[in-house]
Image 1 (spheres, rainbow, N blue to C red):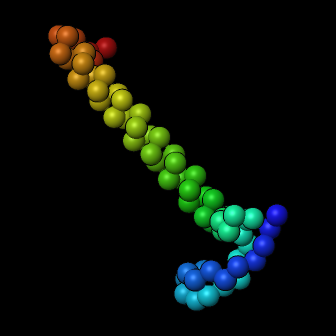
Image 2 (image 1 turned 180 degrees about the vertical axis):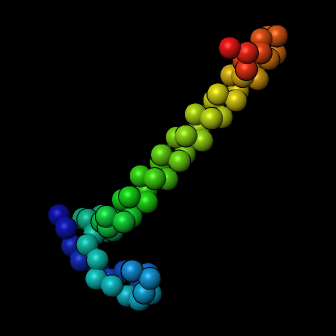
Length: 71
């Protein structure tokens, strides 16, 4: 189910109170820009986690006397 609610925030760089779609639990439905921003943030976090994992692996290899930078 969808409903309408009054949301206070900034839309297209204009602060105000806006009608906005919400779900049956009162959670706001994301705009396209918000979905894109969330997707980029998830991608950034995933890359950061992968880099941290690679750094931990490289540190472990160095502890074992293996230089991970030597190909």
